[in-house]
Amino acid sequence: MSQTKYIFVTGGVTSSLGKGIIAASLAKLLQARGYRTTIQKLDPYINVDPGTLNPYEHGECYVTDDGAETDLDLGHYERFLNVRTSQANNVTTGRIYQSVIEKERRGEFLGKTVQVVPHITNEIKQRIQILGNSGDYDIVITEIGGTVGDIESLPYIEAVRQLLWELGENNGIVIHLTLVPYLSAAGELKTKPTQHSVKTLMESGIKADILVCRTEHEISDDIKEKLALFCNVKKGAVIQSIDASTIYDVPILMQEEGLDVVTLDKLALPNDAETDLEQWQQFLKKHKNPKHKVTIGLIGKYVELQDSYKSILESFIHAGAANEVKVEVKSIHSEHISEANVTDQMKGLDGILVAPGFGERGIEGKIIAVGHARENNIPFLGICLGMQMAVIEFARNVLGLPNANSTEMDSQTADPVISLMEEQKLVTDMGGTMRLGAWDCQLKPNSLVHEVYGKTDITERHRHRFEYNNMYKTQMEEAGLMATGLNPKTGLVEVVEIPSHPWFVGVQYHPEYRSTVANPHPLFVGFVKAALVQKQQQTNASLA
Ligand code: GLN
Image (cartoon, rainbow, N blue to C red; front, side, top):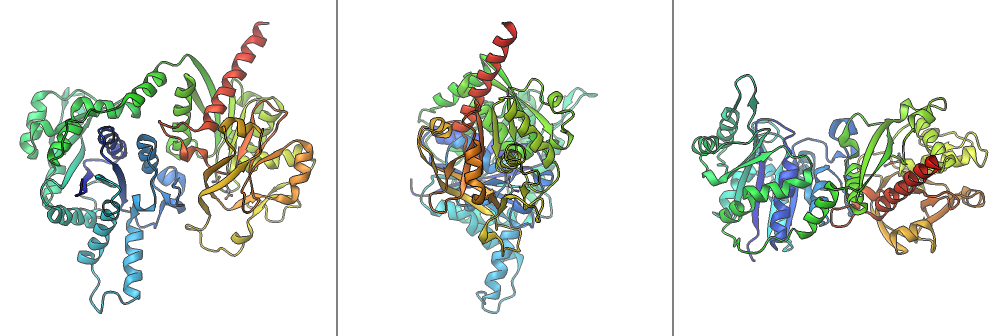
């Protein structure tokens, strides 16, 4: 296929309609028909990337192999498609302006006045076309963040309008995701908000080709006809997207509604290829019919907002299906854990995960939770800050170094078992300056992690400034906390484990960024399996 086709996904009426899931679901269906498909997200905020955003603001910051700190929707794209994304898949207004201003400073605009149209819009168009021009994809789906009508999204909408005109008919289409609310007092679904948002889009010169209507109730044929007539689309292009019990049902629901067929039709692409969703269906079957259940405690300080730990929660869904186990994740606020209540707080948990994070708030609770897992032989997985807390806990309670800490929390600590990397010491900027992206790691033969991964050479994604301090390695290992994964070039410790414990692993990297439906992450699969063993042993013990 020579001409790359472009699909633009806009949102109307309200935010949080799940544009990312719809885009990922459509991409899945197109991929299942053999089209090489990728997805890109354009975010209309002025931060250069979400790396500096508090998780309460924007949920989890997702990290790609090339070290881009990105919107969490890229996580959905990777989990659905099993295709890696990169910096090119996420663009923000901040990044667009930054590069236009840098060009201006280099004199590249040859004395011209630099304006939103055409300079900002040209930069946006170029960013959209980077993926298409790579030759790697037949179809590029571009999701425009925000809601149509927002001041922030105007330059994006204008760039899309121009690009549609340049691409010509059948090479670019617009899918408008909208809300059809149900008024219970009237007992009716209302189409007016959708009519207005389609009209707003038209005022910017863009006609929606397909409407995907989020709804809590079935949309009748009559309403579809009404929407089609007033919004200027064919009836077959009004797609219902009803609330689903799991996001992983959405590709199947969209297939039933014919979203892929109408999309291919609009793009003048053949739609006769068989849709191969066999693996997806297998996953769904296992996900929905678990044979057992385990409860995992997720110890974090951003637990009020589910999106903060999105990739971890999804990784548990993948690993649960792989084990045919329902994983119930119990979020526990680390600030609420104390020595006095830890036994109570951790009651009924078959596994304990201590989450990533930044800063001092809530860390003592995390350390107490690690200690509880270590002493009571409860399967434990520590991720990034969670691994660092495991090292601190071990230093304090096993090595007898009561003041052991990370220099992130106490720069003057007597025992800096976690400390700043040498190259980080001179860094002053906060944005994009951590140790980011994919790094090689070598696992110790015959370690637990070697068994879990089934190999010794792995690559995993990082996002942190602080590291295990190698000055303490001998002491730690002699006492039983083994460094079983090392960066082969720098010798930095990436994995620790306690061989005398049934399943105790801390990883400096983020396995959750690499788990997909097609490839559940081995660490999560192993952890869930260990939690199940733990549960069965507990049950047997109580029966004996
Ligand atoms: N705050 C820690 C560091 O910067 C851990 C980061 C994380 O958990 N992602 O090293």
